[in-house]
Image 1: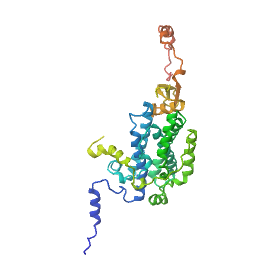
Image 2: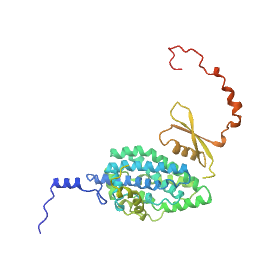
Image 3: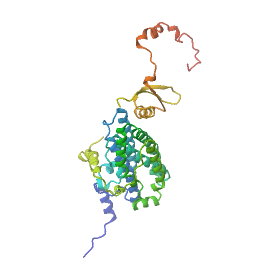
Image 4: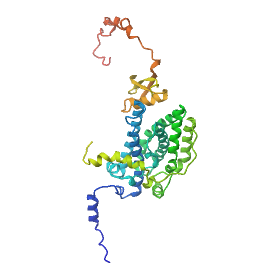
Length: 273
Length: 93
């Protein structure tokens, strides 16, 4: 059976130029898939949590809390823009990928639930993100280093704010305590994924651009436990970890989030804002 | 939320300037009041320092006494330092 002639480099280059970008594209930075894959993890975490927090806009318990949550959302979307922008076209990556292509952890896509669950999720994530960004100050990749250095101050504030709220809700009324415990039970299952190291991350760590989060896992657990203790809440027992977000195996919630987030640019591709 | 006390927010816009009243926020306690003040009034780089004071701790003058408090000053122009001749060499006064 005759084989196909080899593809000429000039044809390949042309195809690359004219090919419409779409849902199943490889990361835009095809020359360095390890770096692009890691940037997607960082960017998608920030983007999806930013979108989630944005859902509170106009619905928060008070106008001041509404502004707080919107500020966090905008910080995160800003970070996502920079990380995704370092991997390719940030808008294309945010709006033209489908569920299977997202590399965010499962924690950030969890539904807001009530204010208590949102704050527990924020505490668990921001504490991790703060330690991660601090450690990424030593990344060998200049773009990652610079974005992390800028964002670490934003995230320090997210972490403090969430901690203050969890303390007040846990050590608050009977109802706020019960709701915070529910939120903790919901979110705790997704903590182990934050410290998972798969082959793709291993490759990024070994070339110096990424951080192995297991290096600060003990510090993380102690920090979260300190907040929970002050909130008079028990540290939940470890459950069977739920993994898969980093490989595109998401909960059903992400598809709904993307449907809302991507509706406008997909329906009106020429829209300008 | 409806039982959260009101806090008055004062912002220092730059080093060297005095804190100025910007508005108020509702918050359950002082720490959260500071954070609400930060998120509400300094999100566009308006400030470098914040004070919050419980509104109920502010002692205010009685508007009904405005006549006796403030009107007597109206016809005392000599209290304004505008009757001095300033030498030309003095620039910043």
